[in-house]
Image (cartoon, rainbow, N blue to C red; front, side, top):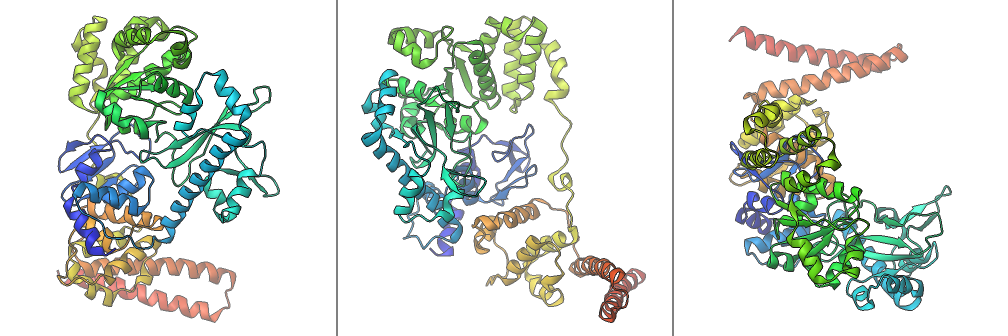
Length: 580
């Protein structure tokens, strides 16, 4: 595929529209801001610049354009991300070129998971007597198991390993899949064995992970184990069943959220096909944002014990803080969604749904679970302090006042310092970087690309001490641009061919340069600073070498040369200062 096609796609889309379809963005000056989707944080460090069509997190440093965001957020290949963005832009893609090495690795992991799933489903049909008996005991129909591709792993440590090798998958990729472990002798063996298998699929329907349920309750092993994080799967990013139920969720404008696989399957079997499961873990911000694409009305359906109630409150708090609408369905004690729907009727469940309470009403009704009244009030104030949107926060505080009968002014006074933190420093001042001279010179080239040839004549890339900045310098100098200018930050990433995973750090550096507007507007001085820093580092290194070999004439000669160059550069700045 030509660079022009990619450039056309990037010009046709707006990065704000792309990113806001995944996470909630709020305007802040020239940028849009949010909490970063790539790391956990409490303050909004994630910035999107609409004019430059790039994003940058000043917490974890991650940055890029629309393509890199979709690729990294969905954990898909560059070509899959490009296809998604092209569809939004209404541009038909030509036949794809051969993927690069990095994308091939990810695609191979996808292939391994599809093969593994086929193998597990085949085992279930042929040898899954134990798994079928378990499902029969839990009253899960085989038709439902077939619809969701439930499988079975043989009671063997090498079954999957042998199957993949027979299908021409080499052991080199095994560690990257997360489907294998190694013993003290470095021998590889299957992670899952003798378990009922639940394939976990991403939003496009591709298998990205597995959950395995033990079928031997008497043995000392975990009831459930799940695939670890890989190149195609991050725990807390996916929702079980969403690839099938998302259209029904959008149609009904509501979603039932349960915790476990069997809870989801029971809901689905009983006709509640606007359901998902959070894969047995606490609901995450990423999962909430993913669901919000289809509905902002979320019903939490957790176990009816105290632990389940507190987990539901925690999840509902996170939903509120992200600007959406949770309601908590209270199940009878000792019941989970699966057991309740087996014992009670659909009408009973619908009545429970009708009586579901929003977060503050639920907390007020069950305040005894959260301590005395003062502790309960403090808990809801803590929740409000984490709400980013000021209007949503004001409305939430007003609701606290009405429900708990406390003057709104007193509530505002209690949380003012938390709700209205001191103004953050500008991104350019937030982070202190090493090799600042090198960065300043690169910023100069980005602003005045017509000067890059003159700079290249006077500065070899070997003077750059930071490898990523050196590579970026070499790439910028090498760009052939007939108009002799760098058109846009977003398209520059494409021109530099920075879409492989190995280039992520360079993209992070590049986006930082574009967000940081502060730089010295004198290329000669910048070149001098870069050279001087490198020569001083060389001198320090030579001094260390000479201390160990004081009679080495070559080292002494090199030291004299470096000192002369440092003196020459230092005299240059003195001479310029005298004539100012």
